[in-house]
View (tube, rainbow, N blue to C red):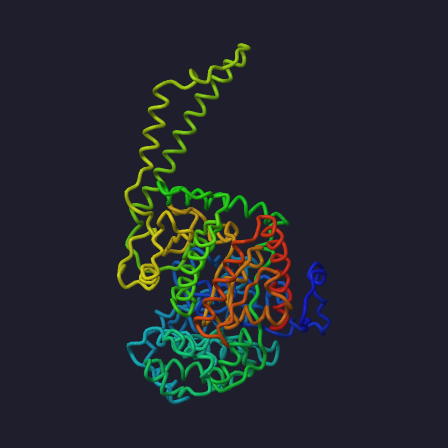
Length: 608
């Protein structure tokens, strides 16, 4: 769908231009979407296929199916078993089942309730050696025995190719079949289907190239040297040459090759030697995140819940005004340099210096939400929340007693003697509560006990810059090395509620083919920082004339040095801290108005 280069405030208030193309004859087609992450959350692709399921089902109805690996726990908790509506699919499944391979069918219990076909890899593992031989005979790609993930992807791909062969044999000429494969793990299914000349159209989408992710994790100047890499040599040195071959073969076998952003399209052209036919940006189900125009109220409610955690975590050192405290966060997979945590920590150190030098009364509390290896909650963190709760219970009990005596005095027509309303026991209880808040150590930086504290990149860099949550620090740090959950005894909030309660999301990624985290912030009306090396940042630069005015701050990490990028990020955060509360409210309104740009109802039409 064509989008204008510049979007004004008024152009975003209504519906985007209507889709004018001819309707797709879906009644004559069957669409299959293949991914390792169907009902199986591993990374961002799960969010892609889950959020666009509803719009795809609305358009394709019973002619749309998702395919992936079967995991018993996931199937029992996320899938409602049922019979396939199409007899040809039932026959194709039975052909595999009668040969000893287990195939499961049902509805995935997400919005849209799409049909899913899940293949039990374990039940077909006895075919692995034979299928390895077939792969070698087909395209001369060999898989080492010790790479469990690659072997599992071959088993899944062989089962899928087998299924498609049986299906097309039963279908005959109509309806036609389209299969859409995501990432290299689904690649073997595409390669084998094409080599066996199965009559169907194929699409392959790469969300991030394998080698690109590895190279960026090694602190390589990746984007400025794309044409200089010896691809085969680099893949071989990292012992992923076989995976790279699967990915590249799938790209070249597909009838249509797509990727999720312009920056990844450039990368794929160099890494995989094929220019994508079309760029299909990732979207979100905006209805899920829109809060009936109450997102400002939801921000206040959820921020209050985060402030309760802050009160407990920083007990004994709560000498800053929570009404003048801003909450920043970074979240995602724990890839320290790829996600930009390195320059974020350095920028926080500089921001701390600027706030202290300018004697700014604003305090910034920064959350790092990145899962790492831990063995339990930090005792100090749990104690902090217990102390907070004890203080709340004490204050509530005294308030009840105070209120009852005040009420009785007023009923008698007497002016209450404030000196007699609280007795000595009440003052003793309050003094004990005050003494309980005394703390002889600094508030902990991390909420959990880390398994390898000394070698952890985030903690090591926090030590380097000296952000220890001391009293004179204007930037406080909380590292929560676990995904958020409403059942947590420490910070009982789901991720969506937590994001709504924050003031700014900071995602200065070096390698981010798309970037769902700033997108989720946008549709919830929360300003965010991204970069021109993320698909999301490039998308916003292309479609919004002044992203910063809409709360999308884009750090230049492609054409500036790390030092310059760090200074730019520091300046973005410092400028944000200088905004008044009124300015932040207006900016959140402007940010939320960009949500139409990220809605699958429009972006989904680029694909199917």
